[in-house]
Length: 340
Image (tube, rainbow, N blue to C red; front, side, top):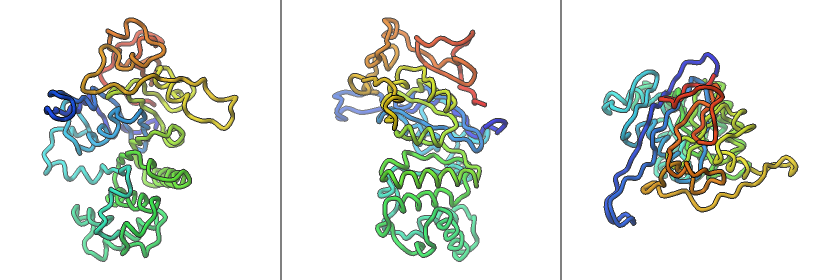
């Protein structure tokens, strides 16, 4: 988003969980769910976040909103570092940062009707003066996300999965946020419903100027929605780039493998399939050197010892791989800057 001010700046963020004996590991350990991640999101921009299950995507999304504790690093929202704020000081900012959860069946309270689910936060943040004003606002939101106004008094079990996700979107929009973390909001939906929800999110972004951190597995949807894309592996970013650059010319071997697995309508345009051996390593006991080297088809002997840092390869494009050389002199970055 050229010229747009930075809304969210994440600087070397770490989220570690200390595990006690009896968690199936036989000893104490530290799970490094997010391990030194840096990025920015500008006003009205969408950053797509991809990676295999267990790589730390959802934890990162929650850490950005302070829904999980941050172990180290900074999260600046609209210029304010929120990592150390008390709940009292954080509350006024929370209305500007909302989340859409993955499971529309589990994220809505089954004992409350749609009026209360969508409207409660308006009363908490004193954005409406009366219950009647709240109801009118909820009706407007339901209409905006494609639900009938009479849904107001119905309960979650009376709706389909796609309709429930629309309710969750209406709840996220109720406070007129500036940033929305969409945590795999399509994963539990049928393909036809996914398309409807993606188009809805895109239309709402244009109307309201929303910024999105869009977390997902489906690279086709990521490509459709995102301005930039970050690829995450074992708690770290291994590549970030403007969408078109990343999809047309991936640099990191892991990014290449993810894109090679995406089905395409024309077999002649399909990428050569790259089969990765094994699973994502245990984040409690990560491998030495590059975390991807045990599965990497392009690994060098040095990859077993040296941890590659995220370096700027060309303007606006970063990769953490010993095989990928910068176009010119480039040092490891403290904070990945915003791409114009």
